[in-house]
Image: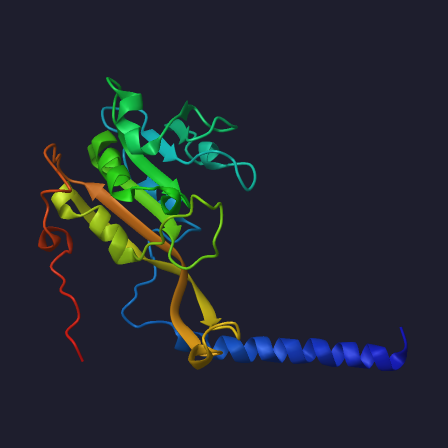
Length: 252
């Protein structure tokens, strides 16, 4: 490489580094003040938090159910993380790390007569469920009183695994799915991995290059089942019952 090319390359690297640092200074401007970031259930440490805060009863091993356990992006380490528990992997397709194959909308039908679970969790799957409200109820049926449910899904993310890419969830959306009316108390709910965005030049003319605030890749919920609600029915519940005492923002 010629000396001048080396100089240009160094300058380019320095410039990119400077731009990156400059951008990071303004990243907080893209956050929304009333959107909480996940704490206990941060994607990097949620499994450790759950296992350390859920204790076995009568000396029995914890029963753990992973919904969507199939290895998709690489080897799963979850069975290792729950090595001291009785781990069951559930998925729509038979594959590595799958113990039970079935439709999550009928989850309880695959475990009739069997002991319920202490921990039920799912990672990057809720967006692929056609009727997530049905899945929430099925999870409730299979979770012990005192057990916890941990949901990790997407709020802002690129289209993937179409045509079965149905929904994207806010933290409040997950709270509604697992509300007190269904017998849950929320331990933690929030967003993770903030994103910086803008409308592209392919958007409508008035929107081109306009910044988009409030983008977060992940949405998480951690809740504990505090009682059985055997007669819960989505057709009978009211909006006021499931919105945790919140109200729609008043018109400006």
